[in-house]
Image (cartoon, rainbow, N blue to C red; front, top):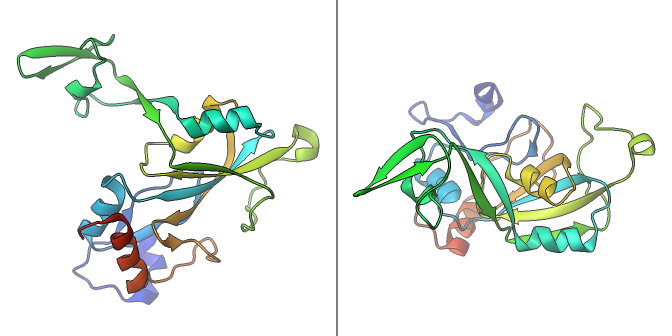
Length: 214
């Protein structure tokens, strides 16, 4: 599918096109594609490049929930035995579970499900729904299921389904999720399935803002 979309751009044959980060199948928005592995790694793994999302929530989020979300929440994720590390142990060096990972002379008993403290770079309640393309499939009828609200959430990491888990943790599940910015590169008026080239200025601005070496 990516190959079909990028045919008009005449990418070099030797370039292996890769996505910069990911979007799960229920999410929408900006997805960068590159043949530069250094750029991809710097954006996804440096822990400093901002990714901004618009999230439509089930219900009208109140101030207390917004403050709770902004302060950071604990979310859980599953990890395979091959990716578990001794640093996943709690402060006592022991965690309930069934996977043993050795670290030096000590052994930690690690659970396959670990918790993560997710702290956003910023959370803002949007006064009105953002001007996004209509979904092909309608989420729901607010006159039947109740009102919704929108927030903008900025992260510098990208755990699996992180935004959805964070909003659910404060009692407002995400109904629609759209990534609108990565670094200095914005979604703008791009429609689903459309592509454009990242300009040299955008790439350089992203690297300069965050001090990336790419």
